Amino acid sequence: MGMPLELNTMIITKGNEIRIKENDFILVKKDYRLYPIEVPIEVRKTIESESTALAVITKLEWENKQTKITYQLVSLNTTN
Image (tube, rainbow, N blue to C red; front, top):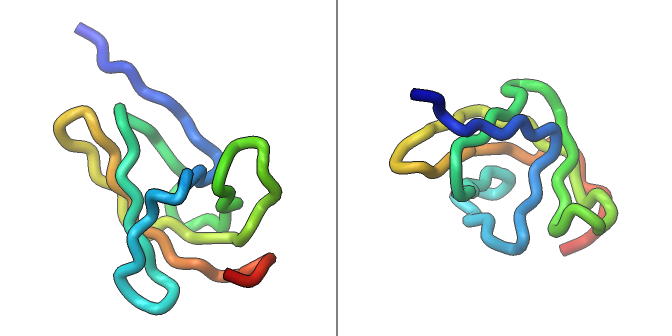
């Protein structure tokens, strides 16, 4: 039996990110997704929007058909 898996090369937040420290965030996404870890990738609010920042994912967890990523902003392109 297979497991559906999506490969993502950018973080799309849709405004659902949760700040846990000054530049650290957690984002929970539906389904299982694979992201590059410890490599700077773009952060966008929607797939069509401009890049708002670069982030490094420090932790990735799969559980109950959800993906939870912890990431740190390393470069901000716009103001909040």
